[in-house]
Image (cartoon, rainbow, N blue to C red; front, side, top):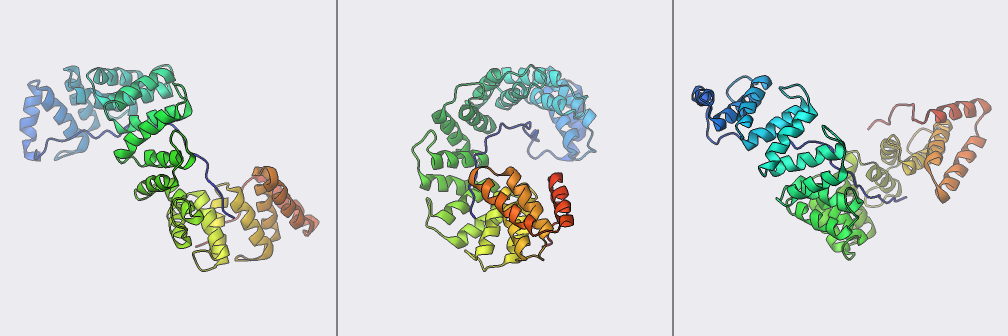
Length: 372
């Protein structure tokens, strides 16, 4: 049974990676000269010396010394140092963790026009870290950074417009910012842009463009896009129907742990569509998805255990899986899954039924995973 995927929209919750650049061609032998210049008060030398201590380029890594020299440069107004110092206080890297001080330094860098600092200030306001949570202020900082082409801010601004976070819902504006981030190679923006074209959200529906953006993200290893691309090949939406390609893309996503891709790959092995039929391999993929809580996989695996197809027949496990699937299901699925559970349960002995019901109440699969 094929299943569809719901949209993924979540604000970024991690700080930008601190990766201050080293001076090109600077060799470790220059350390003494660099340190002397830093001790004379040259801000750029102080900053580069701090970077040297942070990265261990020719010297032992020393986060405390890195923070000390970067703070000296930051105090003199060095914008890169101010940004890095803000992240160091946010992370507690070389200094005691202090979100309020982090905000102070990020604000100094932002006031000098640093787009990375603006984006991180947006994050701090979005999370209420070091400042009161304020989605509208977060939106303003992300917009300032996005207008300077900061890619994470462009993507996040797209999500905020899509979800109405800190601003009114505006699907067209969301698409506009996703396009900017996607054009810079941001894989999750490419995925969201693919969703917009697939659903006609903010743009006219266009399955071909949806597939193009899903492929761009999938080629970068984005599991959600790989799943979506597999589904497009399975259904012939925006691309020619191709069962082998569907299997190939489902497999890429499934190997990254994408539960719906695991379920669909299992269904392909069970039906022999795009791949040779192999109930044991189907059971293995259903098992992996079922352990992540996918109801379709739990149902399918329960049926396999009930019939002894691809696995050793085990009516107790079958009942547990069908009960777990039923508990998550709604509508017709709930009726169908519950009926299968009751059919299996009717064939159990009273002792088996008591055991199966006790295991089902635990809400998990208590037995070992199916081995590859």
